[in-house]
Length: 370
Image (cartoon, rainbow, N blue to C red; front, side, top):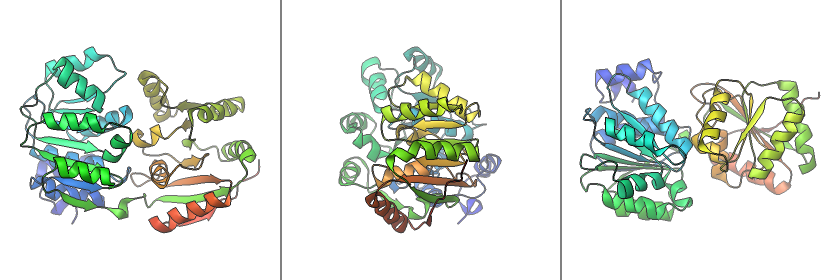
């Protein structure tokens, strides 16, 4: 089944073609029909597979503009709230649907102004949504038709379970509940049993990793990492690279080393203010900087179509982190490369196991000389 065969209106199909959705991903093809039929779903899919459009396309097909909250999307991070809201605006250019991104770190008065003007789609983090619903009573939920929980496993992992359960108990009983998760853990299953009605289970394993990404590993000792990174960046001079490290301290250390070598670089981690993080993303998108050093907070929310390289300076803390990191490149039909620094036989063994499990080829990378 492709776009033309889906039970969507011609207006929606025209919008999708205009915005570049000529070929839908597996998760989109599997999700759109049951959502259009009015069913609850729980979908297992990784970031970078097009899951945002998978729920927005059928939701928008069923909405009419009433300037009252009809859709509530809960996400774990500010960056993901911004990403989903951008995609929502892109997919509804002529519908006059009003979209609001709601998260901490932004002046509350802007969000209150948006609610007073009228909003159809609210996308936000659990803490700020609770603030608006229970403390400020900024909007009513009487007209709510859809509740989407994007990256449920991440929200539960961040300790938001009580918050999202509190929100779910407040929303109308008559609604569609759409759950998206990279992993279907016992906690996610328990949440689905509690709040979703006979959900259709959707798995899209073929979408785990973008097929246009080439995977490599570089065997080096810990003390060789900095010199190898500098050598690689100096010789290749790529225009868009994300370097992932596991700690905020290491991110800032790498940033300072690269600045000392006259490379255009900035960094992002969870201690930065939202305004600061937004400015960094904007500079990276506009190619004012070519290098972004990040902790895994950026892997969940950063959506830039033409990132040439992802470099795992520190070995990912688990398999899912590897998938989320490397999913930043090779997107939207573009090609990309992922390079992982490996400094022990154990790390190499873990990496090869991920490649076998996810069915992708991985090769040893030979760093060019200066």
